[in-house]
Image (cartoon, rainbow, N blue to C red; front, top):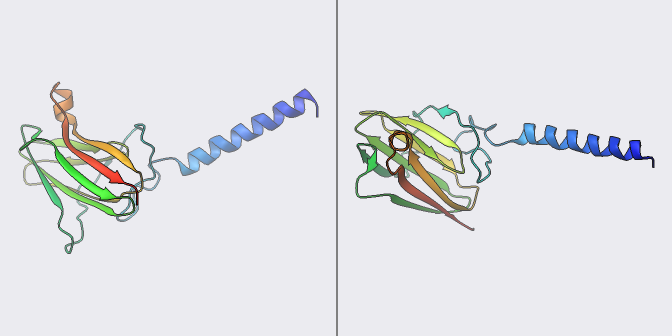
Length: 151
């Protein structure tokens, strides 16, 4: 095969890889009910999702309360096994935006408007859950740590 033919095959393979990434990239499934986008552990650009999602009534959500953009009692630990549904709620005395790193999920929270999170734990690892307002103010932004253990 000629050098030009090999280069053409490499270019075609690159085009196919980029197209596959664009089709399957993290964040494409944000409208999925009770699921999270298949994300990598590296951060991707985020979009704010509506905070009206509520976990099913039969499964209680862990509640994290923020005062001045900091978690009352320190950062919470949320532990699940891969494949389980992560469910938690954040209540705050001030407007804020909560971000689950790795899963690239964000919800707005404010007084009287809790942020409810419910998504499938499909990525193993330890992921920070942070307050964007605390981060912008130069404070410790960590409000919880999500630990997803292997199944």
